[in-house]
Length: 252
Image (cartoon, rainbow, N blue to C red):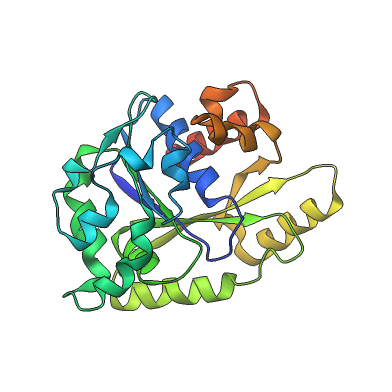
């Protein structure tokens, strides 16, 4: 199984980076060879795995804009089977620099497709926008996971994202599919969480993962230690939820 999966939602704070780090780590612990691509200028996926961004020589920025060999940007992490292409704040300006490049929407595809045979999964952590970098990620991906926070405005903006996916399918990546909608920050004590889950399920049916990511303090603490929650506190609810998500993904 060789699959490139983008984690995308233009809404901020829904758990994209948390999911990218911990799903990648969970898949790696299932024995899969995984590459995490940090495509967010905030570089939280990179720092969340203990990478000192200031000491990095090559990032996804250099791969996209300067056409360097992506192998020069791949870094090992402390998680067995998990590698990383880090990001950098320079990625903020990449969209402007990419405007004049040929096939600008397919630059990440050019970078990642040659790597796909080397990894079982390539996970792309997208920024909270629908800009050119996210379009590049969706063009390179086989599928997309859409994290949805269990809050009142959960479905806000989803229509815009789905329209972007529809456009990309029609013009750039006909094979792109929705891997699933993932409910995050779920709190079983709150009626609202169940209502949001039922609403998302009513709209998207079988596209909604059975796994949900429960609110968990350990999930919030882990990145500050440069660790996935599976390494920081393997018995926590967050670690259990991401292990379940990885197993569900592998069954698909």
